[in-house]
Image (tube, rainbow, N blue to C red):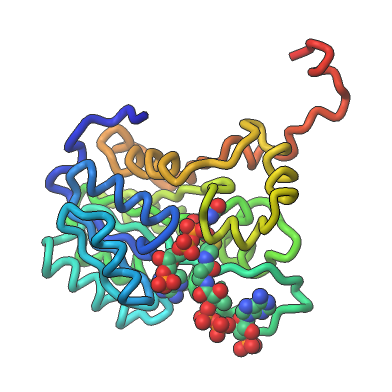
Length: 266
Ligand code: NAP
Ligand code: COA
C-alpha cells in the first residue's frame, strides 16, 4: 500500500550506490516503478546487471567499489552519460560482520569504516557537480548503531555515527545550492543480508521482535516508501534529518516488564 501517486518521479534520474541487493534494491525498484530513470552500482558487475534486469524500466547496472573515489566517480559519470544529470543519489553500500573489538583486526575495523563512512563521503563528494541544481536530493542509509551502541558492532557503530554527522554537515554546506541531504535509519528488515548476519536463528529473531514497539521486522518495501517521501516535493523543506523507519526500535526495549499491560492497562 502506498500514498504516492503513479509517475511521481517521472523525469527524475537516480543513482543508487549499493542498489544491487536488499534494501537499496527495493528503493531502486520503487523509484523505477514511479517513473525515475535508475542506475544501481555495486562491486560485482554480474550482480549489478541482474539487479538492473530485475528492476526493469530501462535501469542500468554499474560496477564500482565505493572505497575507490575514481571508480565511484566513473560510475556516476556513466549514469549521467546514459540519463543526464542526477536528481537523486543514494549512498547505501555497507559491510558488516559480527565480531568483538578484540576479534577484529585493524584492517577489519577499517574495512567497514571505509565502505560505509568513507564510501558515503566518496559517493556524495563525487556526485556534487553531476547534480541537477537546485532541487537534488541525497539520502545516506544509516542504522540504529549510529545512535545506540551495540556489542560486536564497534566498526558499524563508529561508521554509521560518522555518516549521521556527515549528513548534517553536508545539509548545511549544500543547502544554499538547493541540495537536500537526509538519512534513513532502517530497523531490522526481513530477508536481508544485514539481518542474516545479525540474527542467524529464529530464536534471535524472536529476541529482537519482542523488544520492538511494533513487534515485527520491517519490509524492504516499507523502507522504500520512506525513500520516496524524502525525495518527493512533499519533503522539500526537509534536510539534515534522519528518518527512523524502524518500528520504534530506537525507542529502546519495548517489553512490558511489569505485566500491567496484560492486566488491561494501556
Ligand atoms: P546488502 O543486501 O548486503 O546490500 C549491500 C549492497 O552494497 C550490495 O549492493 C553490495 O553489492 C553493495 N556493496 C557492498 N560493499 C560495497 C562496496 N565496497 N562498494 C560498492 N558497493 C558495495 O545489504 P542490506 O542488508 O540490504 O543493507 C543495505 C543498507 O541498509 C546498508 O547501508 C545497511 O547498513 C543498512 N541497514 C540494513 C538493515 C537491515 O536490516 N538489513 C538495518 C539497518 C540498516 P556488492 O556486494 O556487489 O558490492
Ligand atoms: N570477523 C572478524 N574479521 C573479519 C570478519 C569476521 N567475521 N570478516 C572479515 N573480517 C576481516 C578480514 O579478516 C580482513 O581483515 P585482515 O586483513 O586483518 O584479515 C578484513 O575484515 C577485510 O576482509 P575482506 O574479506 O578482505 O574484505 P572485503 O572488502 O572483501 O569484504 C566485508 C568486506 C568483510 C565487509 C564483507 O563481509 C562484505 O563484502 N560485505 C558486504 C555485504 C554486507 O556486509 N551486507 C550487510 C550490510 S549491513
